[in-house]
Image 1: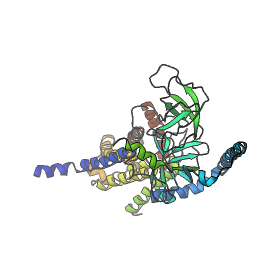
Image 2: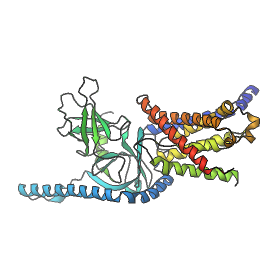
Image 3: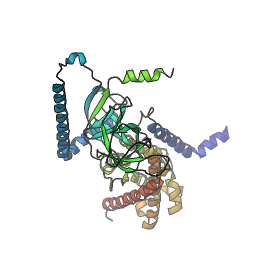
Image 4: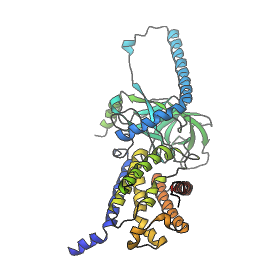
Length: 274
Length: 167
């Protein structure tokens, strides 16, 4: 017993050091695990409110760019609207909206208050949380393309796992329908990698990549980027480098997309496992 | 000023400086100074190390909270805080009896430089290894360690030079 007390006396600082390191390591491992990352994140009340105050100031410097981006997106949407009108006129049938009403996604606007893109595991913070109806695993996009999905939420703030995170894997496809998985190797924040595209798929430099809609998170056909490099060697992994349409270092307003049928899809997918 | 109040203010100042100013520099896209480790150099040596280790852990964890990094800042800061006494013995040849009289800015520049560079590089290497969390981009980690350490060191020596009292 005395030996034991003596041991603790002698190594008390080292043991305390080990305890602190153990706590830190647990937090590191938990943070990389999507299911357990609830303790240390910037979506809590204190860090969230501080970040939103700072971003209120810094937003003024990017007002011009944000306005241009919004105008571009509005133009795109107005063009879509016109196309829709044209087609419905040519068909010439009467559409009763209340019968055909069928909404699958709802959009909520939010603002990025903390951005990061230089690390291997990047997270963003937005100024909306569970009070605004958000929950885990909702898509986050802006006018130019995808940004990530929600990960951890407090009542007023939310943390987003960026596409620039080595743990993020997103179903993506070429315009011609061949689909693969989008991930990031942690190097350049403008370039992500598309893997598992079949060899016979005709890929050319400049082709557009969009979301494939084969997950319950992202709607179909949201823009991602364009192909800039194709691995033509006989390598095992058929890697295609994709340049993002978004400049991830400057993003302000975003949309969070809620899939109204997600619960139904999940239930159906899980029912086979029982 | 009272020592406790001084270090309390230093703690808060370093967190805010790191989170709201230095984390946004990203020189050339990824090079950042991590000046908050100055806390380890400035905190006085004491025989009882519990409070110091705990404060280092809290400082690292506060930065982790803001930068969504789990516990990597806490881990690397606590490591250099624990190893500080070992390096003081190696570089300055000081032992427990000398702690109350030890002042870093009274030591010769060469020894001070060695001590600070060693701890900074060690901290940055641990930080970037854990931030990367794989052996995949190890060259990236080493380059980032070197560049960011240089940046941190320049900033540290400049700020010490500016804020030190004229003799």
